[in-house]
Image 1 (tube, rainbow, N blue to C red):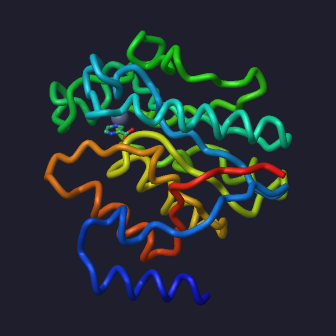
Image 2 (cartoon, helix red, strand yellow):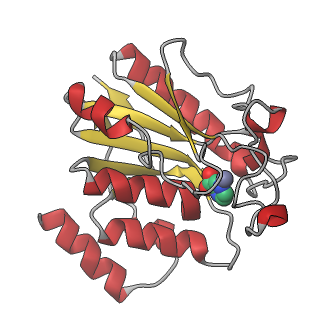
Length: 219
Ligand code: VGL
Ligand code: ZN
């Protein structure tokens, strides 16, 4: 795949700034084999939440626009959510690394009120097993089956956080033979280390994801 090779080359040559040097030209035109995956736009990952991603709310208008276009074209929309039990292994008090977040049924686990999810959205709960971390929307869910049954060939991905759940969801989409378009204006990173988000984007590109930060059209 030519573009994939080109991006690999670019990734090798230039380290930063990633968003300007890797942005693809042109519009993204949604087609009938596309689906949208909205990753973890939940209160706990937004400003004021227990695991707030800096500038996380900036993804919402971009995702809302993409959902509107997808909906107009009749394309399926999937919204993943972190849906942990209180004793989840990823929480500091249980020996993990994260503050308690997205406890199933809590306000923090709810999708943002500003996220304009359509009524026919498919919600994918993940991280429900107390003993397993599950960053990817594909891990221990039927997301892959659902997409393949609908004849989906390409997924458009945005949400939180770039360096964890977006990263792993994109990896798994690629492993499941789906093409991926990553909306770089619709993702934000936790950045435990300062360049984690950029490195995550590089890594997704290297594995074959395309990135897009321009206009989205549904014709
Ligand atoms: C996430 C840290 C812990 C994410 C979930 O949605 O990216 N990050 N759990
Ligand atoms: Zn989590």
